[in-house]
Image 1 (cartoon, rainbow, N blue to C red):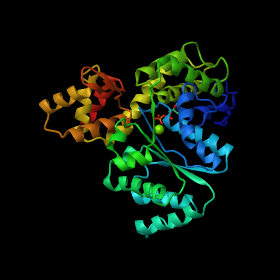
Image 2: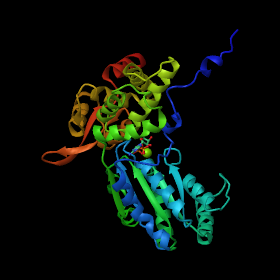
Image 3: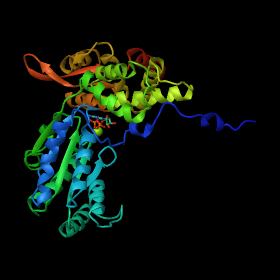
Length: 375
Ligand SMILES: Nc1ncnc2c1ncn2[C@@H]1O[C@H](COP(=O)(O)OP(=O)(O)O)[C@@H](O)[C@H]1O
Ligand SMILES: [Mg+2]
């Protein structure tokens, strides 16, 4: 029998380097984020000359380049100066005060055990080491809303504030969140001390997405591996789904892999469409086990609109279904947005100001099929 691997020994004509399309890849160039990166750099530049940095709060809807821009700025800073060192914390994973303090302590050299120490002990060990180190730590709290959602988690921000205000230790913080209201949820003392510079990441336009995808594709694919319009269609879809670059990049990766599997010479629109539908169903499959009945029924109601303002949705839901606290409703919207099932950007809502405009990020038919099967 022929060896099963010999089939794939054919020279690959699609990907030059598919890793360029992986979520953790840090590109050398981030089109359309020059201004935002500059604002971030401005906050931490003082470290280079031994001065105290400003802290930053970064907000924007998913896929607008918040995480990658912060990582980019920090990697440039650390390349330029040995005085700064950053620690990245994903608060989906680490959402308790203890767990974050544990990470920071270890980062500054206090080798403390994962369990068994009280919060105060961890804090004071951390402080001892913070006083000794010869660099300025910059802590990135990504998905910070997950931390602040819990009372106990928000105490962590006080811990950090104490380091800066009372101990006068140079220490930088970047809070990143999808929640535009994050800063209004912070206690005023925390806000004035920890979130000195607020940077808003607007969603990308279809034109900007096209440039971003072109740039990434030029490193990931061989020239001529993409049929005409593949980038345009991927960008248009990412644009429609909330200006989310992640969706565009992931669809190119998936489409390329499908083309490769089919032994095609080029990635075609057919491959791309297959990638779209596999992304939709894998997203739903992943999300559904984590949704409560109530969350599913809110999702179902959203699918009956072609986009709806959050106030109207809340009213409709309260009318048809049981009573629901506004707070809980907002938490659900933010959860569905985090799971990439809906987009909910803040838009002008006359005459009252701004409101969230909610629409589905997965096709209605795919969602309804899931709702029926799993109910
Ligand atoms: N301007 C850009 N240029 C190139 N790639 C980008 C750009 N903005 C975002 N990306 C890519 O899109 C994906 C999502 O970006 P990310 O920073 O994770 O978004 P967010 O943190 O806002 O949800 C990542 O793969 C990132 O590398
Ligand atoms: Mg992010």
